[in-house]
Image (cartoon, rainbow, N blue to C red; front, side, top):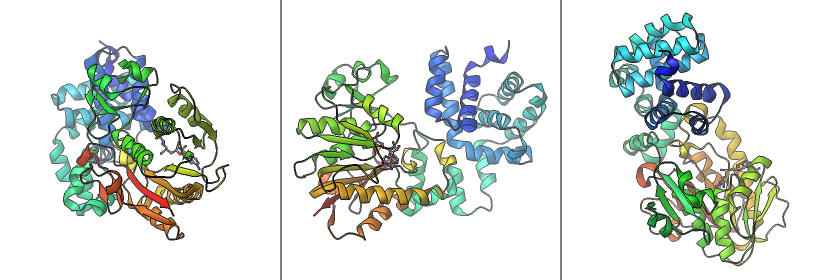
Length: 444
Ligand SMILES: C[S@@+](CC[C@H](N)C(=O)[O-])C[C@H]1O[C@@H](n2cnc3c(N)ncnc32)[C@H](O)[C@@H]1O
Protein backbone atom coordinates (compact mmCIF):
# COMPACT_ATOMS: atom_id res chain seq x y z
CA UNK A 1 0.00 0.00 0.00
CA UNK A 2 1.41 3.45 -0.81
CA UNK A 3 1.28 6.39 1.60
CA UNK A 4 -1.34 7.92 -0.71
CA UNK A 5 -3.70 5.06 -0.09
CA UNK A 6 -2.73 4.58 3.55
CA UNK A 7 -3.21 8.11 4.80
CA UNK A 8 -5.14 10.51 2.61
CA UNK A 9 -5.97 12.69 5.62
CA UNK A 10 -2.33 13.17 6.58
CA UNK A 11 -1.30 13.82 3.02
CA UNK A 12 -4.02 16.43 2.57
CA UNK A 13 -3.10 18.05 5.89
CA UNK A 14 0.56 18.15 4.83
CA UNK A 15 -0.32 19.84 1.53
CA UNK A 16 -2.45 22.43 3.30
CA UNK A 17 0.35 23.16 5.78
CA UNK A 18 2.72 23.70 2.87
CA UNK A 19 0.28 26.26 1.43
CA UNK A 20 0.04 27.98 4.81
CA UNK A 21 3.73 28.11 5.59
CA UNK A 22 5.22 28.44 2.09
CA UNK A 23 2.58 30.61 0.42
CA UNK A 24 1.03 32.48 3.36
CA UNK A 25 -2.42 30.95 2.77
CA UNK A 26 -5.06 31.15 5.50
CA UNK A 27 -5.31 27.67 6.99
CA UNK A 28 -9.11 27.58 7.26
CA UNK A 29 -9.62 28.69 3.63
CA UNK A 30 -6.91 26.41 2.22
CA UNK A 31 -8.31 23.47 4.19
CA UNK A 32 -11.89 24.15 3.05
CA UNK A 33 -10.77 24.26 -0.59
CA UNK A 34 -8.63 21.13 -0.27
CA UNK A 35 -11.47 19.20 1.40
CA UNK A 36 -13.90 20.32 -1.31
CA UNK A 37 -11.54 18.94 -4.00
CA UNK A 38 -10.72 15.70 -2.17
CA UNK A 39 -12.99 12.75 -1.76
CA UNK A 40 -12.39 12.02 1.93
CA UNK A 41 -14.91 10.24 4.11
CA UNK A 42 -16.15 12.03 7.24
CA UNK A 43 -13.56 10.44 9.53
CA UNK A 44 -10.62 11.35 7.31
CA UNK A 45 -11.94 14.88 6.80
CA UNK A 46 -12.18 15.27 10.60
CA UNK A 47 -8.61 13.96 11.03
CA UNK A 48 -7.24 16.31 8.35
CA UNK A 49 -9.03 19.23 10.02
CA UNK A 50 -7.63 18.31 13.44
CA UNK A 51 -4.10 17.94 12.05
CA UNK A 52 -4.11 21.31 10.27
CA UNK A 53 -5.74 23.23 13.13
CA UNK A 54 -3.59 21.48 15.74
CA UNK A 55 -0.29 22.22 13.98
CA UNK A 56 -1.34 25.85 13.39
CA UNK A 57 -2.14 26.29 17.09
CA UNK A 58 0.94 24.62 18.54
CA UNK A 59 3.52 25.23 15.80
CA UNK A 60 5.82 27.45 17.86
CA UNK A 61 6.03 24.82 20.61
CA UNK A 62 6.48 21.95 18.15
CA UNK A 63 9.36 23.88 16.59
CA UNK A 64 11.11 24.09 19.95
CA UNK A 65 10.56 20.39 20.55
CA UNK A 66 11.95 19.60 17.09
CA UNK A 67 15.04 21.74 17.64
CA UNK A 68 15.72 19.81 20.85
CA UNK A 69 15.01 16.44 19.21
CA UNK A 70 16.98 17.14 16.01
CA UNK A 71 19.84 18.88 17.82
CA UNK A 72 20.02 21.52 15.11
CA UNK A 73 18.17 24.69 14.06
CA UNK A 74 15.09 24.15 11.88
CA UNK A 75 16.50 26.64 9.36
CA UNK A 76 19.04 23.97 8.42
CA UNK A 77 16.23 21.65 7.25
CA UNK A 78 14.21 21.80 4.06
CA UNK A 79 10.93 23.73 4.80
CA UNK A 80 8.72 20.86 3.55
CA UNK A 81 10.49 18.51 5.94
CA UNK A 82 9.88 20.90 8.84
CA UNK A 83 6.13 20.92 8.06
CA UNK A 84 6.09 17.14 7.90
CA UNK A 85 7.83 16.92 11.28
CA UNK A 86 5.37 19.44 12.81
CA UNK A 87 2.48 17.35 11.56
CA UNK A 88 4.05 14.22 13.02
CA UNK A 89 4.67 15.99 16.34
CA UNK A 90 0.99 16.83 16.59
CA UNK A 91 0.02 13.29 15.87
CA UNK A 92 2.54 11.77 18.27
CA UNK A 93 2.11 14.16 21.18
CA UNK A 94 -1.54 15.21 21.03
CA UNK A 95 -3.42 12.42 19.24
CA UNK A 96 -1.33 9.68 20.89
CA UNK A 97 -1.50 6.66 18.56
CA UNK A 98 1.01 3.89 19.33
CA UNK A 99 4.34 5.71 18.68
CA UNK A 100 5.76 3.03 16.37
CA UNK A 101 2.68 3.27 14.11
CA UNK A 102 2.81 7.09 13.99
CA UNK A 103 6.54 7.16 13.26
CA UNK A 104 6.28 4.63 10.50
CA UNK A 105 3.30 6.46 8.93
CA UNK A 106 5.37 9.67 8.97
CA UNK A 107 8.31 7.92 7.35
CA UNK A 108 5.94 6.64 4.62
CA UNK A 109 4.55 10.14 4.09
CA UNK A 110 8.07 11.59 3.92
CA UNK A 111 9.09 9.01 1.32
CA UNK A 112 5.99 9.67 -0.80
CA UNK A 113 6.08 13.48 -0.64
CA UNK A 114 9.72 14.53 -0.14
CA UNK A 115 11.88 11.54 -1.06
CA UNK A 116 13.55 8.46 0.36
CA UNK A 117 16.69 10.40 1.34
CA UNK A 118 14.95 12.09 4.33
CA UNK A 119 13.37 8.97 5.83
CA UNK A 120 16.31 8.18 8.12
CA UNK A 121 16.28 11.68 9.59
CA UNK A 122 12.49 11.63 10.04
CA UNK A 123 12.70 8.30 11.79
CA UNK A 124 15.50 9.41 14.14
CA UNK A 125 13.95 12.78 15.08
CA UNK A 126 10.47 11.38 15.69
CA UNK A 127 11.77 8.56 17.85
CA UNK A 128 13.36 11.21 20.07
CA UNK A 129 10.14 13.25 20.09
CA UNK A 130 8.20 10.14 21.12
CA UNK A 131 10.47 9.50 24.10
CA UNK A 132 8.58 12.16 26.13
CA UNK A 133 4.90 13.03 26.45
CA UNK A 134 3.47 16.49 25.74
CA UNK A 135 3.44 17.48 29.47
CA UNK A 136 6.99 16.20 29.86
CA UNK A 137 8.16 18.23 26.86
CA UNK A 138 6.45 21.35 28.26
CA UNK A 139 8.15 20.84 31.60
CA UNK A 140 11.50 20.30 29.95
CA UNK A 141 11.23 23.39 27.73
CA UNK A 142 9.97 25.50 30.66
CA UNK A 143 12.95 24.81 32.87
CA UNK A 144 14.80 28.01 33.72
CA UNK A 145 12.36 30.14 31.70
CA UNK A 146 10.68 33.33 32.93
CA UNK A 147 7.02 32.93 34.06
CA UNK A 148 5.72 34.65 30.90
CA UNK A 149 7.66 32.19 28.71
CA UNK A 150 6.21 29.31 30.70
CA UNK A 151 2.67 30.66 30.27
CA UNK A 152 3.35 31.10 26.55
CA UNK A 153 4.54 27.49 26.30
CA UNK A 154 1.61 26.04 28.29
CA UNK A 155 -0.90 27.88 26.10
CA UNK A 156 0.97 27.71 22.77
CA UNK A 157 1.31 31.43 22.07
CA UNK A 158 4.32 33.68 21.47
CA UNK A 159 5.40 35.39 24.70
CA UNK A 160 4.46 38.90 23.51
CA UNK A 161 0.84 37.84 23.00
CA UNK A 162 0.78 36.07 26.37
CA UNK A 163 2.13 39.29 27.92
CA UNK A 164 -0.60 41.38 26.25
CA UNK A 165 -3.23 39.06 27.78
CA UNK A 166 -1.61 39.28 31.23
CA UNK A 167 -1.61 43.09 30.95
CA UNK A 168 -5.34 43.03 30.16
CA UNK A 169 -6.62 40.27 32.41
CA UNK A 170 -4.02 39.56 35.10
CA UNK A 171 -2.11 36.31 35.51
CA UNK A 172 -4.89 34.01 36.66
CA UNK A 173 -7.40 34.90 33.94
CA UNK A 174 -4.85 35.18 31.14
CA UNK A 175 -4.30 31.40 31.13
CA UNK A 176 -7.93 30.33 30.48
CA UNK A 177 -8.25 33.21 28.00
CA UNK A 178 -5.23 32.02 26.02
CA UNK A 179 -6.35 28.39 26.24
CA UNK A 180 -9.74 29.42 24.80
CA UNK A 181 -7.90 30.44 21.60
CA UNK A 182 -7.10 26.74 21.15
CA UNK A 183 -10.75 25.68 20.99
CA UNK A 184 -12.64 25.72 17.68
CA UNK A 185 -15.41 28.37 17.59
CA UNK A 186 -19.09 27.58 17.08
CA UNK A 187 -20.57 28.36 13.66
CA UNK A 188 -22.95 31.29 14.06
CA UNK A 189 -25.26 32.58 11.34
CA UNK A 190 -26.78 36.04 11.20
CA UNK A 191 -30.31 36.39 9.81
CA UNK A 192 -30.44 39.62 7.86
CA UNK A 193 -33.34 41.89 8.83
CA UNK A 194 -36.27 41.58 6.44
CA UNK A 195 -34.67 38.60 4.64
CA UNK A 196 -34.72 35.72 7.14
CA UNK A 197 -35.82 35.09 10.71
CA UNK A 198 -33.90 33.22 13.44
CA UNK A 199 -37.08 31.46 14.58
CA UNK A 200 -37.54 29.92 11.12
CA UNK A 201 -34.00 28.50 11.16
CA UNK A 202 -34.51 27.26 14.71
CA UNK A 203 -37.72 25.53 13.57
CA UNK A 204 -35.59 23.85 10.87
CA UNK A 205 -33.07 22.53 13.43
CA UNK A 206 -30.63 25.36 14.23
CA UNK A 207 -29.93 26.33 17.86
CA UNK A 208 -30.95 29.81 18.99
CA UNK A 209 -28.11 32.33 19.38
CA UNK A 210 -26.92 33.15 22.89
CA UNK A 211 -26.41 36.90 22.67
CA UNK A 212 -27.66 38.39 19.40
CA UNK A 213 -31.37 38.38 18.57
CA UNK A 214 -30.45 37.88 14.88
CA UNK A 215 -28.24 34.80 15.52
CA UNK A 216 -28.58 31.06 15.25
CA UNK A 217 -25.89 28.44 15.79
CA UNK A 218 -25.51 25.54 13.35
CA UNK A 219 -23.59 22.27 13.24
CA UNK A 220 -21.76 20.83 10.25
CA UNK A 221 -21.50 22.47 6.86
CA UNK A 222 -23.33 25.84 6.95
CA UNK A 223 -23.82 25.62 3.16
CA UNK A 224 -26.70 23.21 3.76
CA UNK A 225 -28.81 26.18 4.99
CA UNK A 226 -30.78 27.64 2.06
CA UNK A 227 -30.94 31.08 3.74
CA UNK A 228 -27.14 31.21 3.64
CA UNK A 229 -26.85 30.01 0.06
CA UNK A 230 -29.45 32.56 -1.06
CA UNK A 231 -27.74 35.45 0.79
CA UNK A 232 -30.59 35.98 3.25
CA UNK A 233 -28.25 35.03 6.10
CA UNK A 234 -24.47 35.10 6.58
CA UNK A 235 -21.84 33.31 8.63
CA UNK A 236 -20.92 35.77 11.37
CA UNK A 237 -19.68 35.49 14.96
CA UNK A 238 -22.30 36.78 17.38
CA UNK A 239 -19.78 39.34 18.65
CA UNK A 240 -19.75 41.09 15.26
CA UNK A 241 -23.54 40.97 15.23
CA UNK A 242 -23.77 42.56 18.68
CA UNK A 243 -21.52 45.41 17.58
CA UNK A 244 -23.35 46.13 14.32
CA UNK A 245 -26.70 45.93 16.11
CA UNK A 246 -25.45 48.15 18.97
CA UNK A 247 -24.40 50.83 16.48
CA UNK A 248 -27.69 50.58 14.60
CA UNK A 249 -29.78 50.84 17.79
CA UNK A 250 -27.90 53.51 19.80
CA UNK A 251 -29.79 56.83 19.97
CA UNK A 252 -28.61 59.00 17.04
CA UNK A 253 -30.04 61.72 14.81
CA UNK A 254 -31.70 60.88 11.48
CA UNK A 255 -29.42 60.82 8.46
CA UNK A 256 -27.27 58.56 6.28
CA UNK A 257 -25.03 55.79 7.66
CA UNK A 258 -21.39 55.16 6.76
CA UNK A 259 -19.25 52.01 6.85
CA UNK A 260 -15.67 53.19 6.39
CA UNK A 261 -13.82 49.83 6.08
CA UNK A 262 -16.48 47.50 4.76
CA UNK A 263 -14.79 44.45 3.24
CA UNK A 264 -15.68 41.60 3.24
CA UNK A 265 -19.04 43.01 4.27
CA UNK A 266 -20.34 40.93 7.17
CA UNK A 267 -21.24 43.96 9.27
CA UNK A 268 -22.27 46.00 6.21
CA UNK A 269 -24.94 43.42 5.37
CA UNK A 270 -26.42 43.54 8.86
CA UNK A 271 -26.18 47.34 9.06
CA UNK A 272 -27.83 47.68 5.66
CA UNK A 273 -30.84 45.65 6.83
CA UNK A 274 -31.18 47.95 9.84
CA UNK A 275 -30.68 51.10 7.71
CA UNK A 276 -33.35 49.96 5.24
CA UNK A 277 -35.76 49.37 8.15
CA UNK A 278 -35.01 52.92 9.36
CA UNK A 279 -35.36 54.23 5.79
CA UNK A 280 -31.82 55.64 5.77
CA UNK A 281 -29.17 55.33 3.04
CA UNK A 282 -25.86 53.58 3.70
CA UNK A 283 -22.50 54.29 2.08
CA UNK A 284 -19.89 51.52 2.32
CA UNK A 285 -16.23 52.23 1.45
CA UNK A 286 -13.42 49.74 1.04
CA UNK A 287 -9.83 50.27 -0.06
CA UNK A 288 -9.42 47.09 -2.10
CA UNK A 289 -11.54 46.44 -5.22
CA UNK A 290 -11.67 42.66 -4.70
CA UNK A 291 -12.93 43.13 -1.15
CA UNK A 292 -15.54 45.61 -2.40
CA UNK A 293 -16.80 42.77 -4.60
CA UNK A 294 -17.21 40.66 -1.46
CA UNK A 295 -19.32 43.43 0.10
CA UNK A 296 -21.55 43.47 -3.00
CA UNK A 297 -21.89 39.70 -2.66
CA UNK A 298 -22.80 39.99 1.04
CA UNK A 299 -25.71 42.40 0.38
CA UNK A 300 -26.93 40.78 -2.84
CA UNK A 301 -30.23 39.46 -1.45
CA UNK A 302 -31.60 42.85 -0.37
CA UNK A 303 -34.17 44.42 -2.72
CA UNK A 304 -32.06 47.60 -2.88
CA UNK A 305 -28.29 48.00 -2.65
CA UNK A 306 -26.27 50.39 -0.50
CA UNK A 307 -23.83 52.75 -2.20
CA UNK A 308 -20.52 50.85 -2.46
CA UNK A 309 -17.28 52.55 -3.44
CA UNK A 310 -13.59 51.72 -3.61
CA UNK A 311 -11.97 54.48 -1.58
CA UNK A 312 -9.43 55.23 1.11
CA UNK A 313 -11.38 55.71 4.33
CA UNK A 314 -8.71 58.12 5.57
CA UNK A 315 -9.73 60.53 2.82
CA UNK A 316 -13.34 59.57 2.07
CA UNK A 317 -14.79 61.27 -1.05
CA UNK A 318 -17.74 62.50 1.04
CA UNK A 319 -18.98 65.75 2.52
CA UNK A 320 -17.65 65.97 6.13
CA UNK A 321 -20.20 66.22 8.94
CA UNK A 322 -23.02 64.49 7.05
CA UNK A 323 -23.46 60.99 8.59
CA UNK A 324 -25.51 60.00 11.63
CA UNK A 325 -23.95 56.58 12.28
CA UNK A 326 -20.41 55.64 11.30
CA UNK A 327 -18.65 52.28 11.57
CA UNK A 328 -14.84 52.24 11.59
CA UNK A 329 -14.09 48.50 11.71
CA UNK A 330 -10.38 49.03 11.19
CA UNK A 331 -7.62 46.67 9.98
CA UNK A 332 -5.89 45.21 13.05
CA UNK A 333 -3.63 42.36 14.17
CA UNK A 334 -6.62 40.02 14.45
CA UNK A 335 -5.42 38.76 17.84
CA UNK A 336 -9.09 38.46 18.86
CA UNK A 337 -9.87 35.79 16.28
CA UNK A 338 -7.07 33.32 16.95
CA UNK A 339 -9.67 30.54 17.27
CA UNK A 340 -10.43 31.02 13.55
CA UNK A 341 -6.92 31.90 12.36
CA UNK A 342 -4.71 29.92 14.73
CA UNK A 343 -1.64 30.28 12.51
CA UNK A 344 -1.66 34.08 12.67
CA UNK A 345 -0.27 34.06 16.24
CA UNK A 346 3.06 32.78 14.84
CA UNK A 347 3.04 35.16 11.86
CA UNK A 348 2.30 38.39 13.67
CA UNK A 349 5.15 40.37 15.22
CA UNK A 350 4.92 43.01 17.97
CA UNK A 351 6.33 45.54 15.49
CA UNK A 352 3.21 45.07 13.29
CA UNK A 353 1.34 47.13 15.86
CA UNK A 354 3.19 50.38 15.16
CA UNK A 355 2.17 50.61 11.49
CA UNK A 356 -1.38 49.56 12.23
CA UNK A 357 -2.02 52.01 15.07
CA UNK A 358 -1.13 54.96 12.85
CA UNK A 359 -3.64 53.80 10.20
CA UNK A 360 -6.24 53.06 12.88
CA UNK A 361 -5.95 56.55 14.38
CA UNK A 362 -6.29 58.15 10.93
CA UNK A 363 -9.39 56.07 10.17
CA UNK A 364 -10.98 56.95 13.52
CA UNK A 365 -10.26 60.64 12.94
CA UNK A 366 -11.86 60.39 9.47
CA UNK A 367 -14.89 58.58 10.95
CA UNK A 368 -15.39 61.37 13.48
CA UNK A 369 -15.00 64.02 10.79
CA UNK A 370 -17.69 62.29 8.70
CA UNK A 371 -20.20 62.39 11.60
CA UNK A 372 -22.72 65.19 12.02
CA UNK A 373 -23.60 66.74 15.37
CA UNK A 374 -24.95 63.99 17.67
CA UNK A 375 -23.66 61.21 15.38
CA UNK A 376 -22.56 57.87 16.87
CA UNK A 377 -19.21 56.48 15.73
CA UNK A 378 -18.18 52.87 16.47
CA UNK A 379 -14.44 52.19 16.51
CA UNK A 380 -14.01 48.41 16.27
CA UNK A 381 -11.10 45.96 16.26
CA UNK A 382 -10.96 42.19 16.29
CA UNK A 383 -8.17 42.45 18.82
CA UNK A 384 -8.09 43.16 22.53
CA UNK A 385 -4.50 44.52 22.43
CA UNK A 386 -4.35 47.83 24.30
CA UNK A 387 -2.19 49.54 21.66
CA UNK A 388 -4.78 49.20 18.92
CA UNK A 389 -7.89 49.61 21.09
CA UNK A 390 -8.14 52.10 23.93
CA UNK A 391 -4.75 53.74 23.21
CA UNK A 392 -5.87 54.64 19.69
CA UNK A 393 -9.15 56.02 21.03
CA UNK A 394 -7.38 58.01 23.75
CA UNK A 395 -4.83 59.40 21.27
CA UNK A 396 -7.55 60.62 18.91
CA UNK A 397 -9.74 61.97 21.71
CA UNK A 398 -6.81 63.95 23.08
CA UNK A 399 -6.88 66.02 19.87
CA UNK A 400 -10.61 66.84 20.06
CA UNK A 401 -12.92 68.59 22.47
CA UNK A 402 -16.19 67.80 20.66
CA UNK A 403 -16.44 64.04 21.24
CA UNK A 404 -17.87 62.07 24.21
CA UNK A 405 -17.51 58.38 24.99
CA UNK A 406 -20.76 56.43 25.26
CA UNK A 407 -20.67 53.88 28.09
CA UNK A 408 -20.82 50.36 26.61
CA UNK A 409 -23.05 49.30 29.52
CA UNK A 410 -25.78 51.65 28.20
CA UNK A 411 -25.83 50.02 24.77
CA UNK A 412 -25.23 46.38 25.76
CA UNK A 413 -26.77 46.20 29.27
CA UNK A 414 -27.48 42.46 29.08
CA UNK A 415 -23.87 41.38 28.46
CA UNK A 416 -22.07 40.26 31.62
CA UNK A 417 -18.37 41.06 32.11
CA UNK A 418 -18.11 42.77 28.75
CA UNK A 419 -17.14 46.27 29.88
CA UNK A 420 -13.53 47.36 29.87
CA UNK A 421 -13.97 50.81 31.38
CA UNK A 422 -16.36 52.60 29.01
CA UNK A 423 -15.58 50.14 26.18
CA UNK A 424 -17.06 46.84 25.03
CA UNK A 425 -14.59 43.95 25.20
CA UNK A 426 -15.81 40.47 24.34
CA UNK A 427 -13.80 37.33 25.13
CA UNK A 428 -13.83 33.69 23.97
CA UNK A 429 -13.41 32.38 27.54
CA UNK A 430 -16.12 34.63 29.02
CA UNK A 431 -18.68 34.81 26.22
CA UNK A 432 -17.66 32.15 23.70
CA UNK A 433 -17.16 35.02 21.19
CA UNK A 434 -14.20 36.45 19.30
CA UNK A 435 -12.27 38.99 21.41
CA UNK A 436 -13.75 42.05 19.69
CA UNK A 437 -13.37 45.57 21.03
CA UNK A 438 -15.73 48.48 20.42
CA UNK A 439 -15.60 52.11 21.53
CA UNK A 440 -18.78 54.10 20.88
CA UNK A 441 -18.26 57.84 20.52
CA UNK A 442 -20.69 60.69 20.07
CA UNK A 443 -20.01 63.98 18.33
CA UNK A 444 -21.33 66.81 20.41
C1 LIG B 1 -11.47 44.42 9.83
S1 LIG B 1 -11.79 44.50 8.15
C2 LIG B 1 -13.47 45.02 8.13
C3 LIG B 1 -14.43 43.88 8.34
C4 LIG B 1 -15.85 44.22 7.90
N1 LIG B 1 -16.36 45.37 8.62
C5 LIG B 1 -16.79 43.06 8.09
O1 LIG B 1 -17.49 43.00 9.12
O2 LIG B 1 -16.83 42.18 7.23
C6 LIG B 1 -10.96 45.93 7.65
C7 LIG B 1 -11.12 46.26 6.18
O3 LIG B 1 -10.56 47.55 5.98
C8 LIG B 1 -9.97 47.59 4.70
N2 LIG B 1 -9.06 48.75 4.67
C9 LIG B 1 -7.73 48.78 4.97
N3 LIG B 1 -7.28 50.03 4.85
C10 LIG B 1 -8.34 50.80 4.49
C11 LIG B 1 -8.47 52.18 4.20
N4 LIG B 1 -7.45 53.03 4.28
N5 LIG B 1 -9.70 52.61 3.83
C12 LIG B 1 -10.75 51.78 3.73
N6 LIG B 1 -10.65 50.45 3.99
C13 LIG B 1 -9.47 49.98 4.37
C14 LIG B 1 -9.33 46.24 4.57
O4 LIG B 1 -9.12 45.93 3.21
C15 LIG B 1 -10.38 45.34 5.23
O5 LIG B 1 -11.27 44.85 4.27
